[in-house]
Image (cartoon, rainbow, N blue to C red; front, top):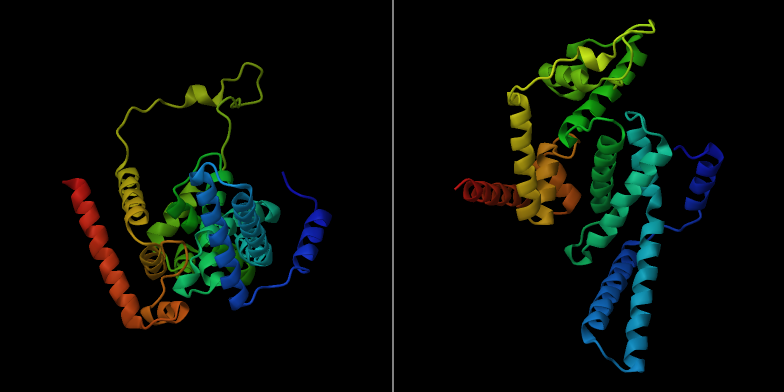
Length: 301
């Protein structure tokens, strides 16, 4: 259900009143959140503690919750910025996209490690985009598409709208391929899955005794198509990578190969983004691929 425009405008106006955080404030809030979690763990594990110690732990827990809320609130504008980009290629309303993106922001604050020296906005943007991609793939369609397939479809939709406005006509397959940097086969497959869902109870004509659509559809007992099997394999590989690799290694692989729906990043660009040399990125990538290969080999044994 869409939120009225005036309420959405009010929400955006309120975001503008929340001050942004400096790098030092981000670290301080992250430390307070971490301290609150430690206090919560101690209180849970200690069982019986005296009133003074309990009060001290509870105050640390409250301070951690307050820091968490402030960290999230100060970065809500980042969600709106990313959701606005997705709105141009998604059929969901902006308020729905913002809600999905907020889930990614919350996850980013939960996972943020201030010791690594990453800029929070860079780290959070990845989580927000992941949440938007998964959220739109889950809620936009009656029949869910794999996340990777849905990401390509969003690319093709955006290029189709932009080129259509520029050319004054529907773009050709090769033009969409050039604009999205996808092969023509990938563009064709993306367009093939972009269909509307209709009810099987729908009559096939206006006659009172017309047959329903479902009665005309054959029940296929065939084995899954090769494309489906390939997609399952790819998803298994990605699940293994998410499970076995460190967050940094997984992030590098996603950015290098465009696994999060963005364009593949060069070693130089990714190094600049993370504040390390291109050789460091190359080493992280090689080690991550080697570890992933060992994990897959072990699973197949």
